[in-house]
Length: 233
Image (cartoon, rainbow, N blue to C red; front, side, top):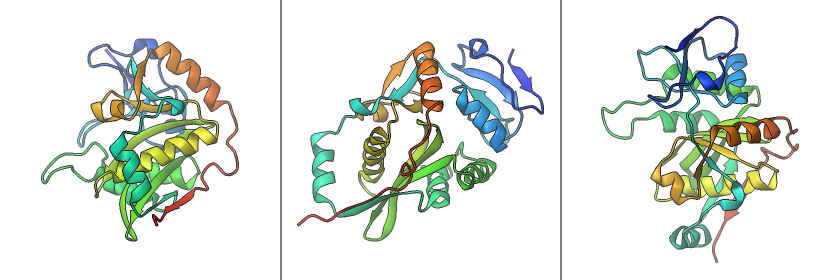
């Protein structure tokens, strides 16, 4: 059995998370900024489908990226060098999350339901949720968004409308966050796509210890001031 959350933004210990389905910890509550920040600060995130109660997760092992272990394939490195593009941070947050929320195929489902879009946009307005955007020919071609507490970044989702556009945003995000002192980026669950970019699995104990350290550190003033333009000769 999992706990049904009350009105206070308090969660049960991660040790109570189920093994099957992996990481399911609690249900109910709301998506208020206070509850979302309390969740992320303990390594918990919401994930549910339309028509379901809010479900809260803390899977183990956890998929993360250590910035110094970022992998860039030869083909992606060539794209990063030779393609004309721009990357920015926090210039189109709602457009990014709405693009991430769009079904991957016609008639498909999405877990980023409208109330989640509004909740994360509110977090963005409060300075806790952020996006990185890839622009090609002046159009928003790809990007990602997530939540930041201190120098810990929790990646949520990314999208692409052009080849490698989300990967471009990801590489720039990881390199910039590394320069800002971020030691670990949460990717939540394993995918082959993330693994190809250098993500790997860590135990719950390692994940929680590292996020506690990261959350306690202050953010540099320039952390979300990022603009890059690649104009090959």
